Image 1 (cartoon, rainbow, N blue to C red):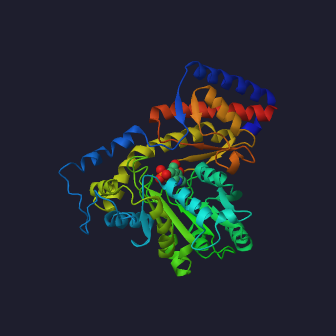
Image 2 (cartoon, rainbow, N blue to C red):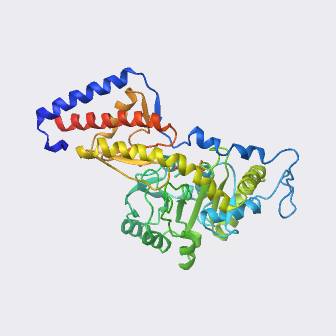
Length: 424
Ligand code: PLP
């Protein structure tokens, strides 16, 4: 029976039952974590052979005769530029292959814009106000970069087609203090949404009032599929090229969740103009990134097809974990009508919306019973979810057995928190 069809007495007695079940779990002193989107140990095992690809007998001379043991090649080794340009969808002269994490490149690009401007524009630090559009719910670390630089964030609602493009177009074309927008177009964090073709085309055709406006297209999950025939987003750079707008976009990607987080390879795809500008600043900060790790990755995968094949192994491990989460929500929460959730075809998260005003309480109840979730509010700028209803579930790290138990507790917490609100 749905929550709103129960009379008060029925609900009170159901709540008593849920409280009892919850307390039984609590007494077990469990320690389960569905907080961060980390690959599980068995996923990390998949790439262990990469450690044997290079040894003291390996040639570290590249395709152009360069010795990768030495300084130089700021833009990344050509073998890696070839592979990663295919991954993020740019030409191989529109990519910089950098260090171990894309977040680091994102931070650097924002930081450079503050100190040096964007391709000759006024440095953002000299402006009275800098604003970014933030599709919500979104990725907390994007928001943290904005907070760090004092960038004002504006929430943009999203649905399964991506951000509200009417709002994006209106704001971007009318306010020159809006300098950027964060997008995770293929399997958004946390919703798993895939931007529609129309959304991508509208992004490419934006006419920003600020000449230094940039789309921060974080394609972190572009090859992280959970299904066999995934829907793929349109290529933003191709669309921008058609619209003569290729300077407007920065595309980010990495192998953090392909090989080893923190020891992968990250890349930035952007126009040749932007690359020339960014390289000048980058070349002051470093003489070059870790070419040996770049080579290790390329030799291990062979080519882009090899990289895609490797992702199938991740899919085999991850698909049952997502299934376990969705199944439990369908079984326990759907009949009660006290929440909604996404069913992603890829990426690292399931986004759950509770009844308004319940998310913080659910996360607290889970924590008390030993299940750690991402803090409620984290998916919104400034940690403020206006309706206190969104929770990011990260199913990748725990085993399927642990997930099932964690989700039992999560569902009980949802029921108890919802009952408290309704009975209040
Ligand atoms: N971008 C998104 C959307 C993410 O969800 C994450 C990690 O969760 C990252 C970037 C981090 O990527 P990297 O390890 O390359 O910094």
